[in-house]
Image (cartoon, rainbow, N blue to C red; front, side):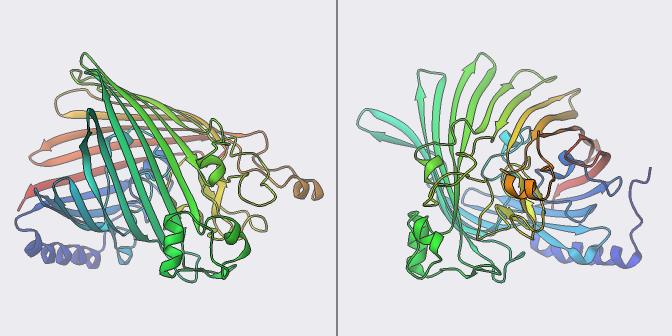
Length: 465
């Protein structure tokens, strides 16, 4: 089996020149150089999902440097695809200032939440796509608030971002905000409640033209108000823009050497699912168990994802609720995606079905039932492992039954398509000096994705300059 293709001398010289051009800027910083080699062009689901789209053009050579000081945090990640080095891209490029638990950040910033390394990913924003360039500010970590005798912790952020142009004539904007409240009970229990709200707005689309993007329209977006008289008809009845988000609940308990967390993310796309919760039991349910004193199995995650309800298969007559059609939108028909990757949970399938919802790519599968297990641990002091196992039943979107009856065909997702995806990964830390080696094997089988398997070999070197 061929592990990688030979790089031409021309390509090598580009990498060497880039490397030495970076040195003056990182002499006092941490530099990591890595090579990721895909064994073939097939891309099993868990090899290419939830890694910030690093393999968008296959195998890569990766340069990353960062600095995390008390008041200043900045980083840069440059990825050079081996087969097409002209497609260089920035996986991370940000600068952030922090003081007294408050932060201000500019740029494209990766967030590597340890809770997501074994997870399928958040229903609102996972690690699946490239980070969106944003300007954001908020509370850096949970900040203690005391009102009389009541004590709790608060976290949140407020941001403005820029989505990619993609299939649009002019790229739309992204508005986002979140607030989390955490309360400790007794000595070892805590409960947190969060609300995350994101909106795609502005820009210009081929089907619906220029969208409202004045400051007054921005205020309507922030407060989820209907559009002005100049907006298209649906935007006058609904909140302006493509609104989506989650209610986020979790309970944590420390039990001897274990930290147990039970969580639920409940998605919403309109008022019916945000306020009235007409989409009932849709969400990502899970339990996470971290064993602090165990090396063999240190972390276990189980998740159940169900998005079958979606407030029903038909919209209301005034278009304000019903048929939530998660991650899709009638104006922004690329849906909840960035650079052709799903921004939320990657189990939602991006594809095309010309002549129906849209002639471009959109979310063709958002009605899902799935079980997922994630395991992490170590087999020695220097060798760690990670394992992901996912079983899903996929029902597409609510179909236009009259259309399929008229052409005497059956909807491809009718009855559900079964899919199984797995990943096993071993990381050997400092197997030679400061070199780290990771070997991962991914496997797909089932009816939704192409049956395939593949290896990824990662070699990286991290040091201070």
